[in-house]
Each structure stands twice: as structure tokens, then as C-alpha cells.
Image (cartoon, rainbow, N blue to C red):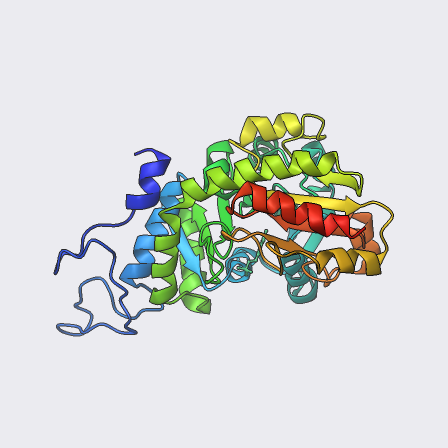
Length: 381
Ligand SMILES: *Cc1c(COP(=O)(O)O)cnc(C)c1O
């Protein structure tokens, strides 16, 4: 099946008992057994729930992997990946990670004895210098957040293979519509389902996908043992959201491109971060590994201090000032004080997340209304 059909059908079958075309919400914690241990494959809902199972199969199918696991949040999914490691083992990862991931790595897992190397991954060959006998995992995000750097997934996969490391890719920003890391050699693909997959800003959820049976079994064991599993209602909402993923992403990309090009010529803007620009430092890699450039754009305002940046961030009428991304509605975010507030100021600024930066998650509204809203908000300058 092609992608646009899989979003609607993968993992889903009419209900055997009733013919209901939509996967029912199996709102149950346990399942009746015929005799002890003899059941229909379902014993307790932390381990398995049919609604969640349909979603897991759907997301795995979109990522071209055999296995999928859904978690109660994106952080819950990453937490499970790091639990594959033992104290003393090491992770190589990017220096401009999602703020929550950085916080979990440095504040939760580093004190437990796992060592993290945060490096600039815009040149993947930089990884090699940090590999040693303790290295187990390379963890990357691409495009990165919020400076939209592109990391060469295939180059990372080659290094991982050569040194027998696990390569995990946080594919949240691209979504499976734009990029499939497993096709490029990634071992684990992670999503904050909260974002484009859910698509409607009404669910928090995470997912992991893999083709590796051994990794899947270890992750499934952690999933069930540690228990960050989502409920059936949320699974149903995401199954429904995914049915329009291809349509939404197409419009996110179209609107994103129009807005990126508009902002770039605007007098109030110093810099626009968007991987679709021909002169983006990793544009060629973006073209090689992505099928489009998405609707995530970061801008740096010209000559704006924190106060002026706040004033502009608060003067939108169609864009809403909020954290998160990937929903149908357009959002504006001030990374320095919102999504990236947990990163120490010095490191944040070194990563390019300056006080006069705003990040846009371009939604699927009418492009004329979005452009007019930007024009009026930047006009208060
Ligand atoms: C939101 C996000 C996460 C965390 O996911 P939650 O669902 O909020 O727990 C991880 N990585 C990226 C890139 C994100 O945008």
C-alpha cells in the first residue's frame, strides 16, 4: 500500500463482532479468561489493548517498520530507549536537542551514570571522534529544534553500523510523511505523537518503531514493565488524526514555504531558519532524505530585545502563542522562555536560541490570513 492509503487503513480492520468500520475504543483494563492463562491474546491492558495495537501497527506501517510501540508521551518513549543502557555506557547526541530530552538526559539519566556527549551533528563525521568502547547509542533529531539544522541520517547509520551502535532518530519534526529514518538505516524511530501524527493538539503521546526483533522485544519489555502506556481513548483520537496526515502535511508544507519566503524578504527579520532555502547549509541533505520541508520555521527579529520580542509574540490574532507544534492551528513560540527554558542560557545562546528568536508552527489555515497576521504583528515594530 502507498502512504496515502496506509494513513487511512494500516492496522485497522472492521470490528469482527459488529462490522464497525472504525476501530472501537476498548475501554477496559482487563480481559476475561476461560481458564487461568487461557485467553484471546489479551490479559491486562498495560500489556496489550486492541485500540492501541491498531495504532501501533498503523504508525509502524507509516515508518516502514515491522514493529511499533505507543507510549503515554514522547518523553516516555525516549525514556524507554535510554533504559536499554546500563550505567557507565555512553550516548552521542546533538547539541540542540528538544529541551525536554536535554533535561531528561542531563537531570535524570546522567546522575544514574549514563554519559552523554552533546555535539554539533551538522557534520555527521564529528561523531566518530566521540565513539569509544562504552558508546551504545547515537540519538539524533532532524530537522533540529528550533534552528532547523539537518542531520545526515544515512551517514549516522553507516557509523552506527560500523561500530555496532544503536541509531535512534526523533522524527517528530518531519513526520513519516516527509522522512522515514528506518529506510536510511536507523534502528529506532521515535515520535512525539502529540505533534503532527495526532495533528489536532488534543492528545499527548509518543511512539517507537523498529525493524529489529531483538530491540523490539527489549523495548516492549520496558514498555510493559515501566508502564508508560497510553489509554484507548487517546489511541482512538490519534488513529482518527492520522487519517488526514497526508492532507495536513501537504498544506503545512505549502503554507510553510510561502511564509518562509515572505519572512525572508521582510525588513523586520534578521534571519529565517527553514531547510527548504537553497542556501541552507544542509539543503542538499534535506533534499536527499526528506520529501518536503514542512511547516516549522524559526525567525530572528532584527534589533529586538526581549521586551520587543515579547510584544510581537503577543500581538498575533490567527497564530496562537503556545508551546508545541504540528497541529492544524498555527502557533508562535518564544523558545528562550518557553520550549527551551530548561536549557542554561549560555548553552542556549551558543546553540543559536537567542532572546529575539520566535518559532512558528505553520498550520493549515488559509495562507492569506496567515500572511496578513504576520504582516500586522511585525508591523507593530
Ligand atoms: C514534543 C517533543 C518531544 C516530547 O514529546 P511529548 O509528547 O511532549 O512528551 C520530543 N521530541 C521532540 C522533537 C518534540 O517536539
